[in-house]
Amino acid sequence: MDILKTDKLTKIYGREENKVEALKDVSISVEKGKFISVIGPSGSGKSTLLHCMAGLDTPTSGKVLLNGENIFDLSDNRLSVLRRRNFGFVFQSFNLIPVIDIYDNITLPVSLDNKSIDKDYISEIIDILGLKDKIKRFPNELSGGQQQRVAIARALSNKPDVIFADEPTGNLDSKTAEEVIKFFRICVEKLGETIVMVTHNEEVAFTTDICITMRDGEILSKRDNGERKK
Ligand SMILES: Nc1ncnc2c1ncn2[C@@H]1O[C@H](COP(=O)(O)OP(=O)(O)OP(=O)(O)O)[C@@H](O)[C@H]1O
Image 1 (tube, rainbow, N blue to C red):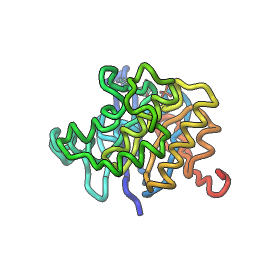
Image 2 (cartoon, rainbow, N blue to C red):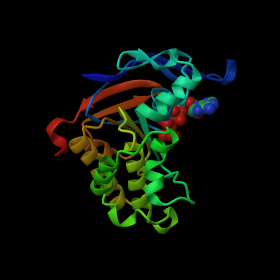
Image 3 (tube, rainbow, N blue to C red):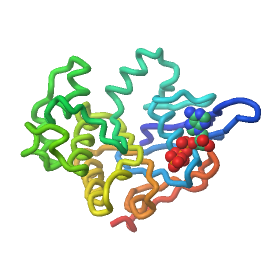
């Protein structure tokens, strides 16, 4: 089942001689429960695509359909609620809140939504991400890899439809990067999550289910890695 689709997504920055067509009529579909990577040279439109799909940026034209509904038909308020409830985010620079402990960082999206915390589910994701002995610590007491695992747990806390990750291993050494990717994989296998990840790392992209290659604002190829990833 396709959970997310883009329909002729176009994004133009600037005007006249400064005009940049960052996305040109991009139509792709994201199947539920898949780990998808987006690769391509610098400036090919990867981050613009991810930001538009996640409703963080508005396309010049085209649609982003979540479960069949165009997210850009929503008011700004409804869109920000949708982002908080239906999407999870993991960025290159962890973006944890330094003054609250790890448990409160993980549950922040739920608290922001004034919802009660599903303690069993939160314990499960803390367990899956190997963070049980860290929940009373503060972000600056953790290594980069551990902080990124907290960011993944935070992204999972609202049981999102899709997790968007923009260069999540960009600040990590290769061994730690591999470990973080392994945790993303576990989220897909154990929790049935859907992940869309931008990466520069071809080796990392090779381990995902589907690899989308971008060039000059267009999709050059969509490759199913099938059994090769294992
Ligand atoms: N806010 C902006 N204003 C003007 N041009 C922009 C803006 N954001 C991106 N662009 C341009 O749009 C194009 C696509 O940029 P984008 O950041 O999506 O590429 P990318 O593939 O993610 O690159 P990188 O791998 O370097 O992060 C580039 O030519 C970039 O210069």
